[in-house]
Image (cartoon, rainbow, N blue to C red; front, side, top):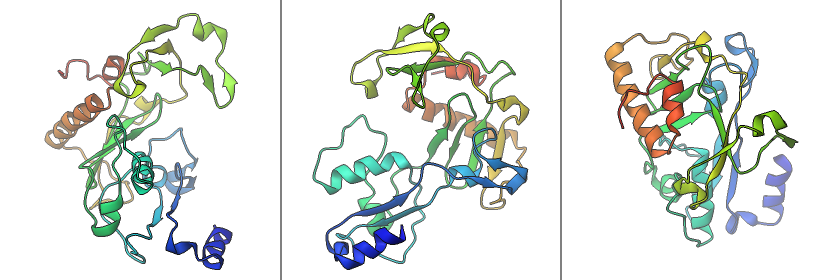
Length: 243
C-alpha cells in the first residue's frame, strides 16, 4: 500500500484517480479467544472492515463518515465514477454523496456466510440468527459454477442437483441447486443480539424479547429483499414468519 501511495504522489495521480482501500473480511488475533475467521459468528473483528476512499471530484481527506455502507456499494461507486449505468438489480448504492456529505445509502446491512449465522446491523444493534437446530438444514448451494476455491464439487453432490430460480440478479437465468454441508455449527452459539453503542466489543449479548422480535422482523424483510431462498427461512426457524 505504501508503494501505491508513493506512486500516487510521484505521478500526481491524486488529481484524477479514484483510490479505494478495502478488504474482504477481518481476522481474529486472539480477541474473544479466537484465531483466524469463519468458524465463529461474524463479530466486528471480522465483519467491520476498513474502507478508505479518495475521490478527486470531492477532494475530501482526513475525515470520517458515520453512514452504514457495505462492499456491495463499491461496484455502483465505480460505475458512477466512470459514467456508466448502475444495474437496477444491484443492492449496492454509489457512495459519491456519502463521501461528499455523509448522506446515508441504507438503514441496515445484511451479512454472513454460507451455512453460518445470517446477520444484520442497523449501526446501533447487531442481530445474528443461528440455525434452528444442529442439522443446520435445509441448506443448498445455489450456483452456476459447481466449484469451491478452484476445486470442482464432488460428483455425489451434483447427482442431486436441480434447477432453482430465476432470481432478479441472475438476469432471468436459473441456477443449480444441490444440498451441501457446511462446517458451521451456529446452534452452539445460538442467536446473538448486541448493542454496539453500549457494548462495542460485543462481550455481553442482550436478552430482550421485544427488541429481538423487532430485529427478527427486520431480518426477514432484508432477506426477502435479497431474494433469499425459502429454505433459508426454514433453516433459521423463520418458516412461519410470513411473507
